[in-house]
Image 1 (tube, rainbow, N blue to C red):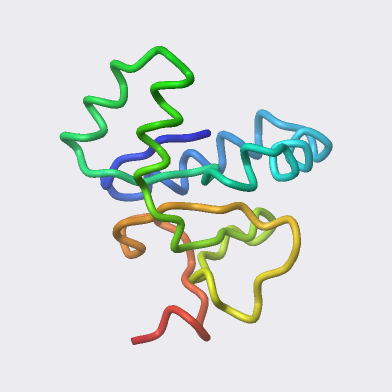
Image 2: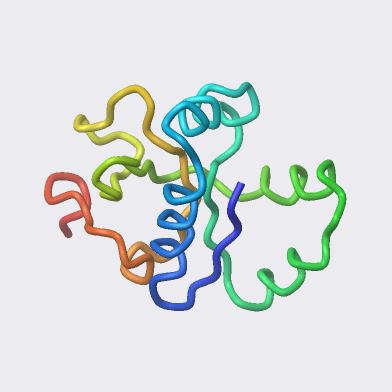
Length: 116
């Protein structure tokens, strides 16, 4: 799980780091693991909460904090495009994300579901 802040392009940098450091098999394992189904793979939080989450070392405490974040978005790992959870472009294998400000992610936004 990646915890990102609202600094511009932090989510994009985390996804690039994830793609560079993992093989396609590891990415599939990350998506299909049981906790990846119920918890987001990437969350974006404000700077004060980000500093607090950086100090947490326990996995259980981190899971409890992450459960508070609502999953509202999904990311296509191949194109790095951000979708809302109900978008019809979402397919199996996309990454769940808890994003608070989509415009600060640095990711391209889906033209269907992310238009105002």
